Structures are given as structure tokens and as C-alpha cells.
Image 1 (cartoon, helix red, strand yellow):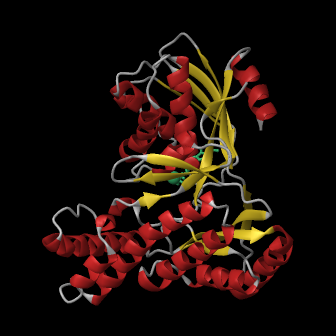
Image 2: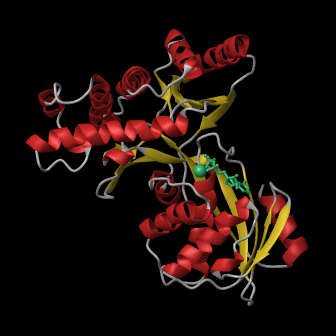
Amino acid sequence: MKNKIQAKFKELFGEGGELFMSSGRINLIGEHTDYNGGYVFPGAINYGIMAQIKLNGTDKVKVFSIDFNEYVEFALKEEDKPKQSWACYVFGVCRETLKRGGKVAGFDAVFAGDVPLGAGLSSSAALESVFAFAINELNGNGIEKFELAKIGQSTEHNYCGVKCGIMDQFASVFGKEGALMRLNCKTGEYKYFPFHPKGYKLVLIDSCVKHELASSAYNKRRESCERAAKAIRENHPDVDFLSDAKRVWLDEVRDKISEEDFIRAEYVIGEVQRVLDVCDALERDDYETVGEMMYQTHFGLSRLYEVSCEELDFLNKLARKYDVTGSRVMGGGFGGCTINLVKEELYDGFIKAAKEQFAAKFGHEPKVYDVVISDGARKLQ
Ligand code: ADP
Ligand code: MG
């Protein structure tokens, strides 16, 4: 990747330029907790986007995407938004930096990546954060890291039509090798926890399906959570979000909300606790408990929150059968990947079985991504 980028940069722009890199992310546990003000627990991964960048002394941005084999040039006024969707991420990051009082001098850039697009590893956050980080460095803006993550998030909101939370950009900017980050989505507080699963592998199995239901179901789940939180708030006024509620407080309102809202809320409150339990387990190097919590999350997402699907339940069941330590659907649901924590000696057998049996049932092989928790946005030497 590096050689390709450097060769293309030389061809288009000549000598010079500095290399920057950022990463995609996984979320070990803490699903559908973000909009409930709860915890998420992501980490940056060994799949990323690398960019070579140099200020060019003009007021124009000239950027080449190796993966799309496309060159785009734009000035930095709002009306200059490019039509290529990948370039809108770069443009958005420039605009959002300017909106925060940062300087954005014109630059030349060539970039490429290996985060699979749209597989749930957040290639878009990797793209935003590598440019947000590099622009900040090259212009000496001194914008703080959390604000760099927000530049990425606002880019998605304002230039790419995606109303996302902060987790992906946060993980991509703050990621560290061998560490997961527990982020409190209500306060923005975060804490690093060691993640050194010696003797285990972390592997994603991508079902390569995306069911239509996803966005309407997402809105319905949010509404259920808001109704449950509102009912609990009548007894406990300090409850801003559902994640603030204790489990017994939910039981108190059982007769006041629908059965459906109840089980949705039951999942969310359980999930917030599971993140805390996983953090405790990691401090003891207890990966068996981590894995068990992942299975519990899958059960909750499948049976209580009802955002799984046949393909993902199949992969989860197969993981149990092959003694995989932990497995669950990752992301919003209705498709995408399962994330699996598996003992090294069981890895080959499990992956072989997953590929063969999934293909026999659903007609196509799933994709497999071995994941290592790695550094996030950074300058390369
Ligand atoms: P994801 O879940 O991977 O973030 P998105 O749909 O949010 O999926 O973002 C994917 C988009 O990000 C792509 O359509 C493209 O515009 C941009 N993108 C991601 N990776 C690259 C890359 N390596 N090169 C160019 N653009 C990329
Ligand atoms: Mg994305």
C-alpha cells in the first residue's frame, strides 16, 4: 500500500509529502447503547487508510484515490463540494476544520486503504480521521483529539448524509495498540483497558448480507427506548437516558409500558452492565468471561432487541458448536459481521466449518477478517 501511494504521489505531485495513517474499528461489546447514553467499547484495528500529503501553496485541494482510481480537485468554499462521494469525506473534513476556526491551506494528497467498504468496520471514519489528523498537524491548528473525532462525525452529518454517533470516529482517532476504549456516550468520558488476548484470536465473519429492515427498525427501537426511559423518569427524575436506569426501576413500570418496549429496555439495561462486567474481566485477563458476555449480548440482540437475522444467528450457533469462546453480531444488526473470540487451536476448524456450512445454507461464502487491536490516527515516520 505504502509503495503504491508513494509512487503515485511522485508521479502526480513530485517529491515530498508526509505519510499519515488511521484505522477502522471493531466494537467488542456495547451495542445500541450509544443513543441510550450508555457505554460502547471499541478499538482501532489493523485495517486502515494511509495518505501522503503535502501543502501545495495554493488555495486548492488536489487529491487522488488509489482505490477508486480517481483524481479530484476542489477549492474550499461551501459551494465547491465535489460530486464523487469519496471526495465529499475529504471536502467535509476541510470544511468542518474551517468551521472550528482551524486553518486549511491547499494540499496535494494520494491515499489508499484496506478497510473493507460497508462491512461494518467503518472505512468512512478511517478516511475522515486520517485527513482530520493530517490537516491539523500540517497547519499547526492544535485542535484537540476529541474535536478531531467530531470533525469526522459532522462530516458524515453535513456532507455525506449519515446521522451517525461519535463512536467510530472516536475509536479511529483515539485507538491504541493492545487497548480497547470504554466511551461513555452521555458524558464523552473514556478509559483505556488492556486487551491482550494471548492464545486467542479475534476474527470477524462477514455474512455479506444487509436486510432492508435496518433503518426503519432502528427508528422503532429508539422510540421504544425513549418511551421506556420516560416511564422510568416519572419515578426517578434523574434518568436522562435509559442507560441511567437500574434494572429494578424497569420492573417498576412493567405495567405502564408495552411488552415490546419492556424487552427492548431490558436488553439495553443489561448491555450497559455487560460492558462494565467485560471491563472488570479484562483487568483480570479473564477472556472466558469476556466471551460469555459476548454470547449474552448476542442472545439479547437476537431475542429481546430483535435486530439479528437468520444468517447471523446461524453463525452464532455455529460458534457455540465449535467451542468458540465468544461470538455476537456486531453493529446495528440485520446483516454485517459477527465478532468472534476464539482459541488459537480451534481457529482453523471453526473458520473452515463457518465457510463451508454457511455457503451450503446461504449460497455464498462469508468473508473472514482477522483483527488485531492497533493504533488509530497517527503520523508515520
Ligand atoms: P463503512 O461502514 O465502511 O464506514 P460507509 O458507507 O459509511 O461504510 O463508507 C464507505 C464510503 O467511504 C465509500 O463509499 C467511500 O466513499 C469512502 N471510502 C472508504 N474507504 C475508502 C477508500 N479506501 N478509498 C476511497 N474512499 C473510501
Ligand atoms: Mg461509515
